[in-house]
Image 1 (tube, rainbow, N blue to C red):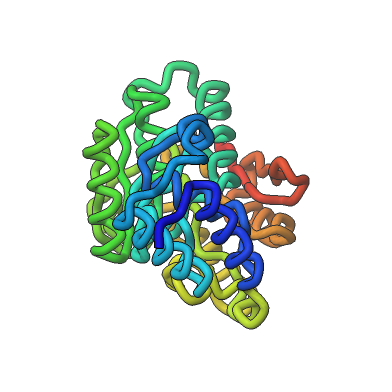
Image 2 (cartoon, helix red, strand yellow):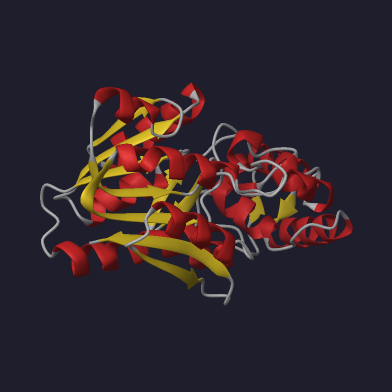
Length: 286
């Protein structure tokens, strides 16, 4: 049975609402299927959808109703104004992480002036969003990134290729590849796993059933990876260096305390995100 665009949208909206999902997802999915931006979609509201596109759209809506994130269905998410490919091998980039990139850029310029030739490492790169954005925003940086999973590195490499970013991707566990190679850095950034394992019970199934658990959970208190960073960072940081972490809301004091114990003379700062939640910790080693 044929449907007009507005009829398909109405159906999707009520179907998703009934399933307890965001109704707006219907519009995002239809725009993807029709290859239309918002303006074009509203211009064709009374047009009929061809049967192939309608079938594809209805399948996508059902997938999302069943819990699959919209970003995995359409295969991408925007980050720092650029489209990044995503699949179930990588965490979907979040707006909060854009604030980590923004904060790092601001501090790099204040600390070092011209960043040309500075070496930056992004640890646990996932889709490559942080590493690629930093390289494209400050092309003078020399950027390397690690991840423990081949699948993630494959996505990150493809994103770098598509977006034209010269980033070295290395398979390895946290900073180990750099420690072994004796490489040192001026800047280290990371959005590591930071969710306490007990939180899994009440989290949305959209996250827990689809996004990679290795990128989400970190022990009973969510701080396991920050503890490991404190052990490994001294071996790879230059005497003057910047470190930036994304953290979970409510973890600011605990992470800052770990940082202060390791880097006693450094300036350690807890930064809130746009929603007023503690979301970043920066270490400035002068």
